[in-house]
Image (tube, rainbow, N blue to C red; front, side, top):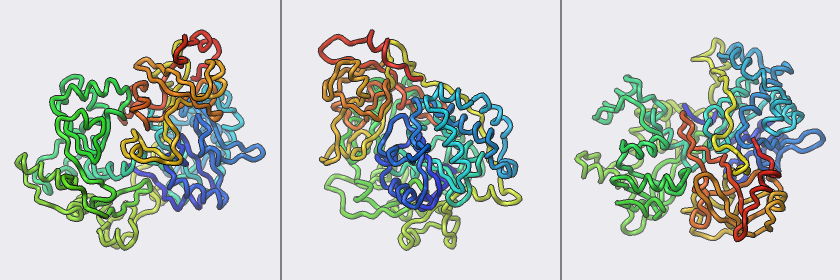
Length: 556
């Protein structure tokens, strides 16, 4: 099952929180309120992030404790391995838990042995003393939670990054107990729910593997059709298949890949090469403008009935507050009508009827009736029957004696630097992220004003601006190996020299994904949005390439 092992309430009652590659204050503000309550209750916050974000401003900072670890982009594995090595060297591992509940420990131990504090400092750019402090604080805490988001997963080695963090939780026994666990904060609304419902290339609803014949059989009986026995394509596979003519038709529901995919120029070229593109959405996105057919859909948060699942695995009801406008239809109605026209009558099911079908097929959702969801304000999966309360945290089985089920495996993971190499021609590392007031490609948030909104910009350290001879607000050309965009400069002392930051929120003013690389993690299918090599040229006068090459530190 793929989901966070902890609950939001646990963030308020734990002793230590590590936000690793997560600016939760801006990207997950509701969740961050729980973190702030935990800090108020005495928890320590550590933030591992290349930027000193608004989240990092809340990190512990007293005496010798400095809770912001500003690593170089793409060096998460060296840092995590050094934390693990220091825990082992200091004898702070939970040896009893490791022996009882895990496997692969010796291979893991050997893999982290080379990552001394000094080597990690040289590669990741974090002082050895800070790495040691994090290792000791995390291992000594009675309860501790590691949270991550796209700063960990939008890399070409995303899965290995995640496993490096899971290693730390296994090494210290910070999993399977109240107040201790790992929590992937989901990058978009209801991403958790989409995965739960089977929107993954190898899973049926309830995380049941599509290549298991017995699991397929029960879905085939319920649906009356054979289920393909092999895993499908993830998103990056689909776009690559467009190049080879293996995928010629695409049906897009509530996504905007024309703006959100890495290497935007290539993504749009692929979309234009399809035989047919159908887009079902509530707004006319850039992707919809390329479509052969556009199906106007109701707003899922206020014009539809259904459920949504958040990052603590809590399923909550969504209720229709008003009817959709004339000519706009509910997603379920559209899909069922389309099925009829293709020769398959699915009837006219309500959202609750579809949910009850899911409950009959997915054991982890079986106890979640609409009546219970309404009465209890939502329930957390797994919830196996209508007397089950749902589980606040996962993997408690690891502490049972004898252990129930398989042991939790360590993973020996190795450092691989970002694919887009820094050179004298492209000496600056560009990373991307979000602002508090905006969301993804700005399709929805761009339609209204916000007093918190900052205009599109490329953020630089003031020292880089001085080298380039530009002032705040001056236009510059940001150039990568794939494209170029023009954006005004904004200075941010929270960046280190040689690091730039841009958002994806304003594609019409600043098409950031014209710059990013579509280097893909082979396991997750995620592109490396977080690590692009660029150069920056003042607009209207020759670029100072020689100065950049000589003076801008090349970050590893």
